[in-house]
Image (cartoon, rainbow, N blue to C red):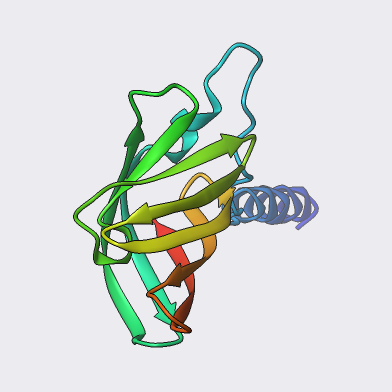
Length: 140
């Protein structure tokens, strides 16, 4: 029996260590090493869950790529547009400067919360007093 107690203790300790190492942790927002382009963390094919004050909830896909201008990234299909919407990047934040896209003015901001999620809010001026306020979550 004396030989069995250390074996049980060691087995229990091993089990605790094994299962505590399996806890899923949320990925931190990526840090941009010096000399690396911060835009790269935003690149890719994203699923967007959008909540529009005028159109309600919608889900669709957007692609984020570099612009020919090194200061910008660009969104393909944001708000259903066929024209790309450009944004600037600073660290894990993005800013959509006011721009005319398919006859409407678009502006907004967002944050890369981790390697697989961007939270955004933007305003689309549709003319006159028609403003659509949109919140969106993009996931890879």
